[in-house]
Image (cartoon, rainbow, N blue to C red; front, side, top):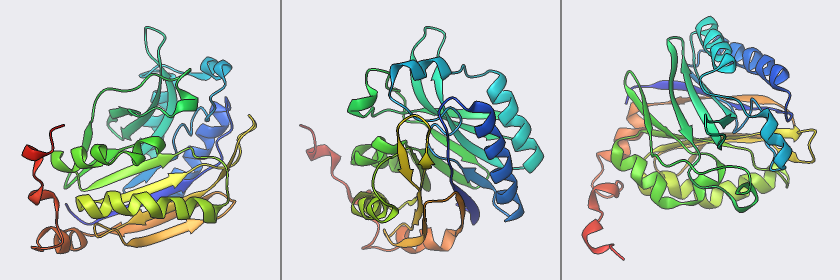
Length: 269
């Protein structure tokens, strides 16, 4: 990989307030651009808001569609790659928790959440593809919230060649300290075991639909160490520089890069 500056957004994302959330994306993406970031990542379902109440299906939107056109406009105006989420409705009426990869050239990819949490299953369908996304000198994956609890997914992405996994969350309840402690239990392992960067962010505040979010963003290095973090009850932006040297220090070390030493031939159940 090459040295890359990223921005993680902690944002308030009211349910069904698409215009308001889109304005927030434009404002915070502009702030990320002024900070020199190349990629800005927003929380899970930031554009349509997060809810598991069935009537929220009415806020789901098609991809592509008018909303994606607006996202491309913002990407062009800021010269950023923007990662943003929405409840997507496909032509057959199925709903997915989807995260878009939007560049100034257009929508270059989309990730549909693979692991659907139990409260979400009456509403969302699971995605079925482990996809990676590429920019010049950087390959990255996206996982959404509940996905991060399944080690196989991160290992699969690492084996496919990713350097960095973005993990946007819509994870309610608890304090910022509680959420940070939770992430320290498993996100450190996702980075350490696979020799990749992990970049996670969460919604914050009242979603006007019965849920409140604690708002945290964290970046983990490929040895599982915390590189940067913010935790507060307000919107914010975390800007981090990820360097090739940090990745190479792990991947060129005979004892600190575990992935090449796996024994998948004996793991079969």
